[in-house]
Image (cartoon, rainbow, N blue to C red; front, side):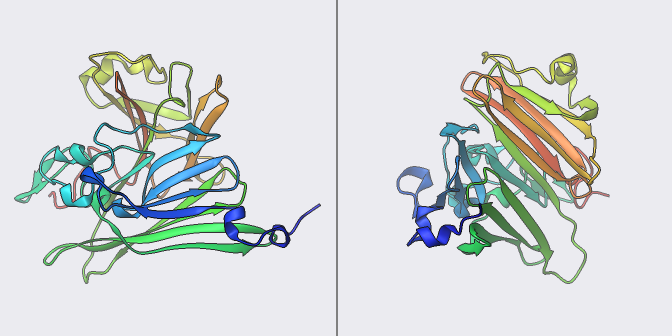
Length: 309
């Protein structure tokens, strides 16, 4: 029988708790953070100070993603040159790449574009957390807006909203990119979703309906028959990247599942295929650098860049 949970509580924290803080010490100093639980088995850490990205997700207490040695780094330390982006790349559950560049560093029309663009180091503004009734239950939303803009250039806003329902071990991420300029402005967007130990280990299964796979380079080509395999950590390890053509279901959605049968934990990710038609798999199984990236994109990672003829 349906139960009005609000008749049993005095404060929303009894159902879904939310804590906001600013971090102290080292290069994380001052970064705004939101920690929440959904009243079920899901705990999330969102960083408004870093593009509203997901630093960590836990399910039934188990960590689901990788965290790099640099840890959380404030945007003030971001260096846009070459691959210096990696010094701020804590990896986490989600790092947003874009909006004017994705992929390897490049020089286009005399402008240097650093690895994966600037978006991941844009702090959010107009951040809001709300908990509202949803029928007899509760819904939690966390939202904020990132501004990627300059004079004589782009003037873009990315508005992000996370939606959680009480006790449901799932969430929805909704992004809207708006051009506030007066001329057409394309954008590139990659959702760098990353999995780590203990979800990721030799027992982990990759469930991906791939219609075709292409290696990014010669080394990945040598290992292409093993793209589904998760090996134990080794050193040294050379990363492998694969580009997949994904199937769509009857609703026009694509997705994948990362599942650990021995721990009985897994993650399902899905999206509208028309919005994000491209997909990259990043396999990096080194000692201390043990991570699987599964990344939907709105354009090919190594495709034509903004401003190229």
